[in-house]
Image (cartoon, rainbow, N blue to C red):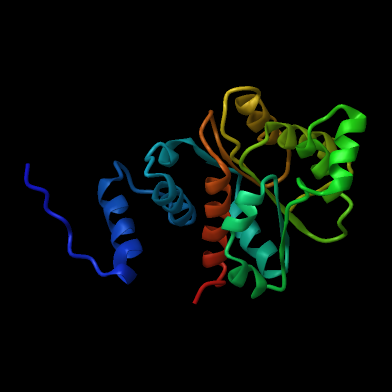
Length: 211
């Protein structure tokens, strides 16, 4: 079997990848969400994201405004945090947080019999700054965010709800879609820390954080 490779320069691989994605999509995407959907497909090579990503009304406009106003990002994994473009985020005077490894979070989770993800959301709720939550792993984080919002203790600028898995994953995403908080949710079982990070990056680039 003869294998023919495309002759693509290293700096042009991403550009060519997005061209292929555009060519292979079976429908035209709304202009405001197209960069986000395409980056998720680019990250995962999974075209299902063209169908399962759900966006609340005017969420992109609201998210870009929040980022430009210095909203910080809270993740539920170090992997998601590490995947966010810190240089782009820093252009808006913001930073990314993940409290999952903090000793006090571990102690609170043990004392309460909860998960670290739940306890880390409680810690994030004490931050006195505008926040975007990017959840790619723990459905319990989304459930806790839903509770905190309902209690009036938290009003996020945006929730990116894309945990991957089988137990309470679908349900936790549906809870977030019932709130009045702007959201980007990957309906169903698919998602992951890499998807959470790439959605953050797509928004950062759209906001002008990338040269």
